[in-house]
Image (cartoon, rainbow, N blue to C red):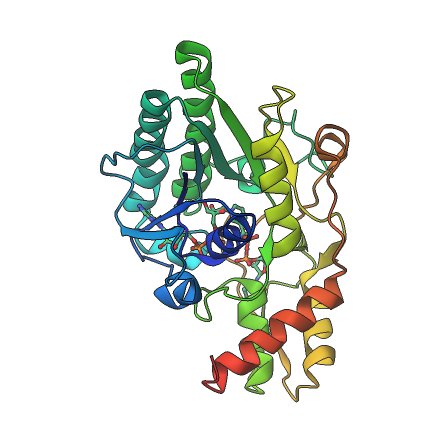
Length: 312
Ligand code: NAD
Ligand code: UDP
């Protein structure tokens, strides 16, 4: 039995689907804050799939052999909506999941993030870089929460011998991102499909590196199942780096939209550059992403197009 917290979310739903296809029994646990039953509705009839409404800031008991801990809002708009809840999810929630892993002798994988590097001074980011995070800013509830979560993982490992894995996920996109979650991929695609203005924050020279969800899920499963004793942290992401202004132009081109680009103020602490160094993942997991940005974006655009037309 495998527990996936945040399983009704964007990445979680793809992970549930993939592991079910591999014949695993899944408990999908979610409080539906940013996730949705729509993301996993097609899995509900599968006898190997169990859905539990629960919040990981409260204890949870089950007999499981692996835990993928993905529960946590991921978009700045959502994690800043209730910042105290966000940090509780990464501190109390991760403590609860580590307690469960300890009792069950289960292996636990924590979905950490490139945000632990903050506004990075080292580029591209390597795992041994300690980061440049503002501890009192509007992103801190997420960034510092995820940093404490990594600390908790390491301390349960050193002190109690819990079998852990830590992945640092870089910007991931694909079908089932929430339409209203404020992230750049969903915002730009929805704006373009509606021929509305595309809102570039700041001058758009800040960069991100976008990884297609199928690639990310493959990497997460490889990390969970590696038996080399490699616990991470390991960066998982795509190394193709794109300035946000160029990203807006690509979306306009791929959608054939009449949208115009407009500039809005840059939110505070918005990282200026981000690109993973994935040498470690290549070496230890024999993993690297294979989906080109335009290929992944076409699939994502198709998804949002159907969603906006009410076809899914
Ligand atoms: P998402 O918001 O779609 O999914 C998160 C899921 O967790 C949602 O279903 C939500 O309802 C659930 N959740 C939130 N708080 C919870 C709680 N207290 N108890 C139970 N469930 C709770 O986001 P996502 O993009 O799928 O991200 C999944 C994980 O990956 C998150 O931990 C996120 O921090 C991490 N991550 C994602 C990205 C990315 O680019 N998508 C990048 C770095 C890290
Ligand atoms: N962004 C933007 N317009 C939007 C949404 C986001 O220009 O409508 C920018 C944002 O300022 C950031 C980048 O796109 O520089 C990625 O933002 P996102 O919220 O997707 O994720 P982040 O990597 O910042 O957590």
